[in-house]
Length: 51
Image (cartoon, rainbow, N blue to C red; front, top):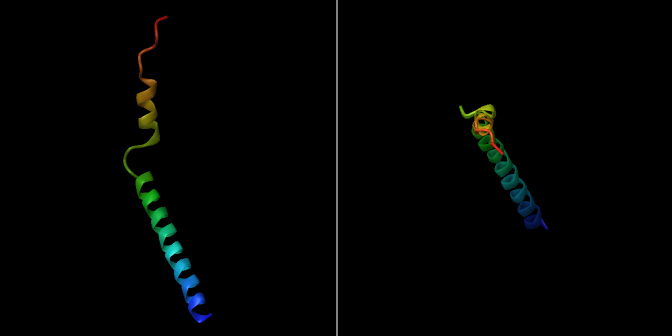
């Protein structure tokens, strides 16, 4: 029973570390110099279709 509790705690600790690392990675990617308006600006600068 004691080993089962240790195993569950180990899984919980690994899960918390993984989620924390994922949030840090997502935050660092989000705070890159490239902003969303820059990427959307490329799509809006397409020449209009002449039909």
